[in-house]
Amino acid sequence: MTVAQSPCVLVVETDESLANQLSCDLQEAGYESIVVHDAAGGLEHCRDRQPALIVLDRMLAGESGLSLCKNLRGTGLRSPVLILMARDTVDDRVACLEAGADDYILKPYRSEDFLKLIRLYLKPDIDTTEQLRFGDLILDIATRRAIHNGRAIDLTMKEFELLKFLMEHPREVLTREQILENVWGYDFLGESNVIEVYIRYLRLKIEDEGQKRLIQTVRGVGYVLRES
Image (tube, rainbow, N blue to C red; front, side, top):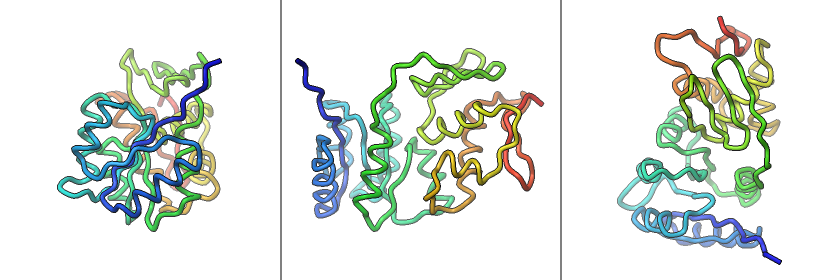
């Protein structure tokens, strides 16, 4: 009988006290944790261990966590990356997205919120061949990849969830409240314009330059996925 191996989470955190707390919480929740304190160590362990998920502090000694995230994505890493941040502004979220991060964790650190996010990103994959289609746009549920006009597109977790919700309701105008509740959850406490940030990045990824817009804004209401 084969015993399933616990998912490995790599923590890159300069603050040793916080790193130890993160590691203890992960281990108590049943995950394997590896802690390093700088960007070089993070790169090395990602190459050697290929962790299931990486947690980076935005402020690392010698190099920002965002720079490290970009470097990791440049190596082809597809594991979820979560950024520890002290602020939650639109600019901060945009910076995380541009670096290739999937999500962020706000300081001061709260174990319950942290582990809830970890469980979300490390929930077991469902063996499925389900695909959602809208015109030339395909969303593969198993791989969490979009395909548009034959071009494969990698999505972060939140981008995937947002596009999935839109594609499950084609041509239906979805209010911002509906999107927040279904993609971010009822307990979302961030700024309400987080939707605009993610819509912008989805458009950049799935819409071809000069072609018709797929995700359209309905001013004062929300968004709709439609052909014209």
